[in-house]
View (spheres, rainbow, N blue to C red):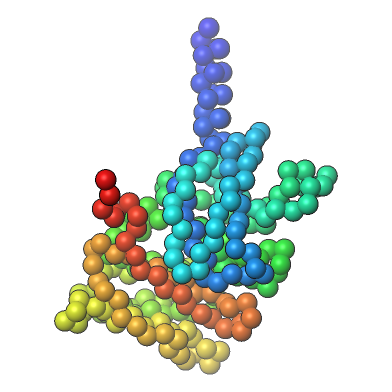
Length: 234
């Protein structure tokens, strides 16, 4: 009897390890190859379904509850049904998700129509991404420098860092945000300068990557109050 119970317990652990429930949002900087919808694979390894998700270029999508297999998010596109793709979908990107329940999938355009986007996953739970902070991802091939108020950070290629809320602000409670990239001669070149409102109710996200057409480093910045922090309307 004890052996049977132990086997059932181990079986239940295996099932729970296979499926992970998350809340997913998406963010897309610019559409590539006219692909404006993607299809995350959901469900278990035995029964996979594909949930249509719209890619927005100027705002985050609404959070969507998903159940993914294991600890990876797989994203597909619809294709003609064949022996290779009997369900009519082709996986074009797979990425490991973080430990949190809230995940953000970022889609960066590429020049490859078969893999139109490069996928990056961010654990956007407040433990990893605190309110008031700015999260910086350098997905380019050059060093990046970012200054926010009195703070300055330099980020190596394919690395990330966080900058806390600044104290050096103007009369409108705004901080100056400047972004630089290092050229081949080792000199820092400014690529953007703007101001952001500082608040514990806001978070900033900065992503640097190589533009697929110009081949130059570009930086896209977003600031928002996440939906779970917004007042609930009865």
